[in-house]
Image (tube, rainbow, N blue to C red; front, side, top):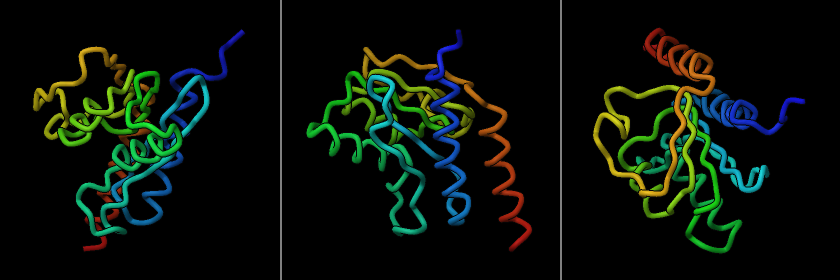
Length: 149
């Protein structure tokens, strides 16, 4: 029997958040935070809406998850995000002590791996889950944005 709550299942939920961002003309990145197979936070980029460069999907999700849990540490949680976290979001994940990060599309220029951002030593990382779907939404967004200008 297939486990219904696997990395692909939760990445699809993050992709739904990314689509919401896309529909708001935000860079389409979505995130969910999961604890014990339950989504405790959902978020998407809001940098344009809030006029805030720190309003990345991950940052919004960390805040919502900490609020849900009543504490700032997310040791037993998993972050699912459609794009490899940037340096800022990876740094925040360090301080939140997130247990695991699962991401879809790589970000070769601004992603935490290329910039060698340190994650918390206990944080596990899984990359490339639904990578094609995550990448396609981002590509479509930037193609449409270029065509509007």
